Image (tube, rainbow, N blue to C red):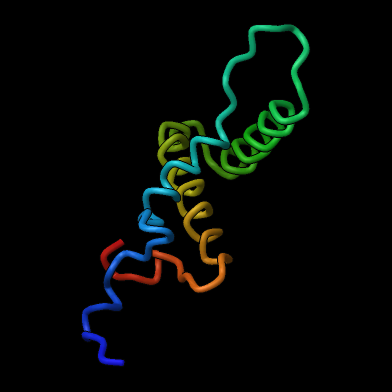
Amino acid sequence: MMVSFFDQFASPSFLGIPLIAVAIALAWVLFPTPPSRWVNNRLITVQTWFINRFTNQLMLPLNVGGHKWALLLASLMVFLITINMLGLLPYTFTPTTQLSL
């Protein structure tokens, strides 16, 4: 099997869909939508708990001046976690191993 040296830099795809697009779209699942009812379901409760704990852990070592970077740091961490979780799929590798990302 002849493969080009530059095939290792190609974006991995699954069923013709680039996995980087899946990683970016999958991060939106973690953000809960505002409910229109008073009692939330279990999924929204778990999402809200996860976001509150994550934000608390992120803000704990920062002083007040560092809080302006919290949104950028939190979105970067969610992005990296989502992309690295895609590496658990069989026959794929994480896009963070590529220098281009």
